[in-house]
Length: 137
Image 1 (tube, one colour):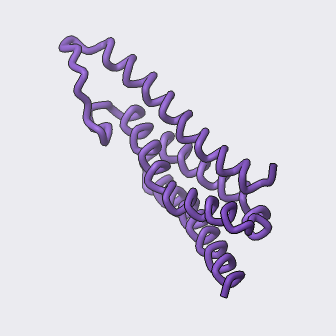
Image 2 (cartoon, one colour):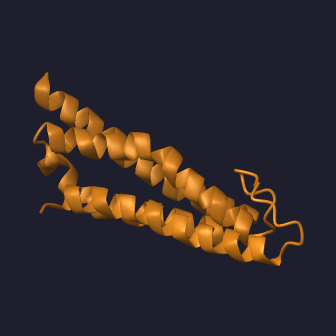
């Protein structure tokens, strides 16, 4: 299995792990509530602090999947993984670091760091996309 396939699987596993963490936090929160309602705010506003940050980190990861997963899938489908393999693990590491920063803090420095790690992912995907398109032009 090549790096591109491993990173695509790793990205999906990261989404799933964040979902399990979020479900655990939501279950604990729900069990402490007196009204036991199954309704919740999808942006996590009903959870204080950490729960809301986990919700947003999970959703941010899901929201980035179309361009990250899309480029990885395009590389696999067009037999262009030689283009994506070299930076694939850097991309996944940047995503995981961004999520961890998102969960750990909301101060201005953390927001700036999150943006830097997001831009790393975006730049890598843009670079790959250009290279894949050039391959077929």
